Image 1 (tube, rainbow, N blue to C red):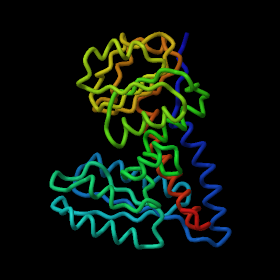
Image 2: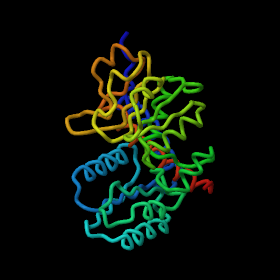
Image 3: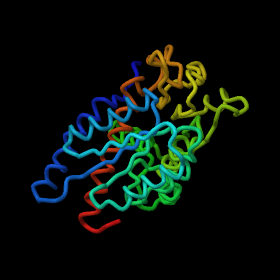
Length: 283
């Protein structure tokens, strides 16, 4: 068989057309233009590229973006002050703090300073807790994008055994919670899991979210599985080795072009939703 390719680039374009219609409707109703504030601390070129991709996506669907560049020497208190200014600005609907920040900054404190109604990247502790409990919240962007991708391609989750390899607070852990909320049976593994191969071999759905190039080997994955690779590394490889998988598994995300576009799409979608909530008074 030939694997179903879960094309995030294709789906993101379809959803951008839908989001533009919704954004245009707000403007026709003479509502304020939705606005995403992006904060970049330091000079990491990869982070700068990611931020620009998000700004470009805003432009494509008619959302405004406010780009804030802060020096690599920025302190935690200086970043907290900037976030507080954005929290108090009624023109800002969403706040994105690009990860990672320089080592001297308390990243968790800064993430958690983002107002819950503007946490469109789904990075706050409170937002995670609400999502895990099945309450309304903005989910972490990458897991939320993956869930949208799985739904679009009619991938059955209920009753399936999903193995998430990775436990980061903005990817692995929220991914596991979202899958659990969708009635999957979930096992969370990581780089220190003993005999990782034997656990991956049991998975109906494998999520690579560990941040290590090709840590998960193709031979571990059983025939007919669904393979989601959230990693991206130099040379265009992910967290999962793909050799021979296309002829064995049921579905597979490409790298690049699978999860990445859906991460940005989830962020933009949730920014628009935040603007719509602000307009209706639903927070």
